[in-house]
Image 1 (cartoon, rainbow, N blue to C red):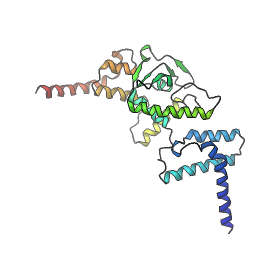
Image 2: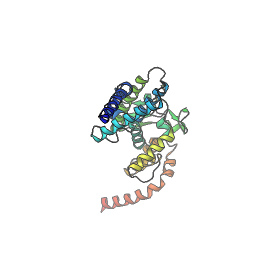
Image 3: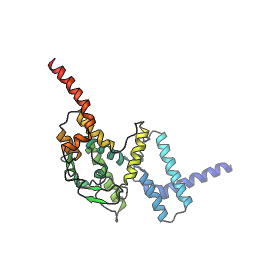
Image 4: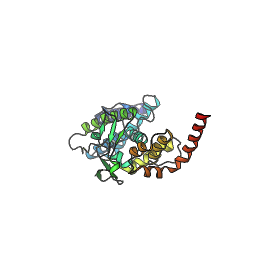
Length: 267
């Protein structure tokens, strides 16, 4: 009897925590929309409101248990709680060859959804503390055409960022950044690097750096016989010679393929 009473008290306590703390903060989100930053903001808000450490801890345990139950029941995918803005960031890097600082400094007004293009006007410093106008070189300030799938991902992300801005309310530090934290501030480059490494490890990929996405983009273009001038312009190199010097290792392989192609054509 005592055990039943204690169980009822525990359930009542969890119900109270859910109604008083969890619902006001996360009730407006779907399960698969809840990100780590939402939970971090919940903790931060409760800390500001002087809730005890015990109360905050119980609330987080309840949120975690709810999400784990939803995953077990198949209501959300195991990857759904990851920050999807970083997946969009990684895709943009792979599909454009943009440098990390260029991506982290990208603004919504630099994107033309009607033309499927992005234009580089500013960059974020390597320490993430300074937004610098202009680009690495004059040629780095460029316009890049983007594939439809990436543009759709950016459009979805824009809606989410606008909703985060609305929920934050007055005082939101609006830098108009495409890739920013939940609170509108620039993403820290080291965090982006760590997350990319983590995702690569989980996917059983060989050790690669974030910057290797740029090299992969260029190599794929070479292999597809895209004109060197186009590749150089997409990468923002100061000249074609720079592109040739950086990717000289790709050329011998292509030379061999050209010979095979000529042989098949004229034999």
